[in-house]
Amino acid sequence: MKRLRFALLAAAAAALLFAAPLAAAEKDTLVFSWSSILGDMNPHMYLPNQPFGQAMIFEPLVRYGDDGTIQPCLAESWEISDDGKTYVFRLRKGVLFSDGEPWNANAAKKNFDAIMGNAKRHAWMGFTDQYESTSIMDEHTLKLTLKNAYYPALHDLSTIRPFRFLSPAAFPADGDTSKGIIKGVGTGPWIRVETKKGEYDLFARNDLYWGKKPAFKQVLVKTIPENESRVIALETGDIDLICGASGQGAAQISIEAFKRLEASGRFTTAVSGPSATRAVAINSGRGATADIAVRKAIQHAVDKDLLISAVFQNVEKRADFLFDPRFPYCDADLTPYMLDRALAEKILDDAGWKKSAESEYRSKNGEELVVELCFIGNDPLAKTVAEVLQSDLRKIGMKLALIGEENDSIWKRQKDGEFGMVFNDTWGAPFEPHAMIASMLLPSHADYQAQSGLPMKTELDDAIRSVLLTTDEETRRGMYRDILGTLHDQAVYLCLTYKTMLKVHSPKLDGVDFTPIVMVVPFERMHWKE
Image (cartoon, rainbow, N blue to C red):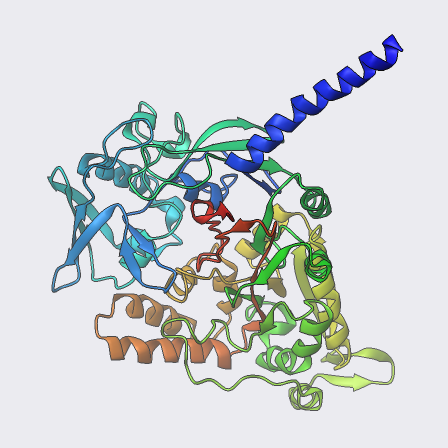
């Protein structure tokens, strides 16, 4: 009897022990998860830093709004000179970093100096090539000077990285943040208060935040590498929401699992509108794809609609162009490549790629029609899409050799141009089209390598440089039409789908909004329903 009473008391004590934290967690803490470590929260650097974590802590001068407009953030207002080369920012007064350091022009300039001291690392962004200097006009006024008028300057300054602001007290002694920082301290609504590698990152509400304070006191981000384990954690209540891009890279849930949870009726689920383009870069400077006939035949051979229904279960939409026409300057009035395998075969026949009784695949001058498609081997969705493309191209007598490799190997192939075809998604807002177009000038990018064999490559590069510096709106619009038209006509991109964001969460949770920037999760908007 005594033993039974002890067991009951122990069970009651355990229930109290666990119930109190769980009740507190449900009230005050939002539990999220991510597949990898979040990094040291250096606002000026990239991997292993995760953008959504950086966006929680650090803020920009200007913000990319939900409606696609540039809005005030750490700068309350700004003026642009008539020649487009000078920006004067009136900085928000009364703002403090979470360590109590003041936000002012000195802090802003210190950050700009550190970022531009590592400009080569940020060369993918056109702004860095046009930057000349920053100067302090007074405590809350910063002047930014460019070498030339660069129309997307404010868009570049609104990105998650590298143009966000670290507390001066968190800088290393030599000021070089590219080598590391003391701590990730910003002005944003959250502070990272604890991290345990491979287990979790804990963010607390920044009570010094100048804007509207978040409803939650804490956001706990659990490290869960496997998507299926993350889904189980949601189903058992160990996490409150899953939110991320559909498909490869930032995907935090498989499409199959999303559909299952959607059908269960237990969760609130939603699919965003188009956010970026899932595309394959086709190398115009190497192998069989150096022949434009091969590139055009590929365009007409792929059944995108079947791919969308069978693989993406209709959570992504058909993409016929490199950028969604709803992005600025991207409605270029182009004619899409439609599925027409008879036309694809005629294009190959006319170009000398002939079928024979001896082989399943075409050949020309004794060379078999083989194209390599490179992808990240441990990405199951990429592998599935690659196999679908392989099947489609086999139907027109083209052999698609699939090469699945480690992440680093794929990046190296993109940089060196050692690919026939390679997955090469676009970046979404606020980068499209200008930043993606600017990156095409860099030999280290797959876009440059894919375009390397084009007979008009020099003229194309010149046009890209010019469009970024053009001040006349109609001239700029016409130049974008020409650039996008050339890329489309030369068939250097196989555009598959417009990617979306997926969310699944407890029905008790409200304010889980999609934002235009794919890698932003707006925890500060979220709250429990009353």
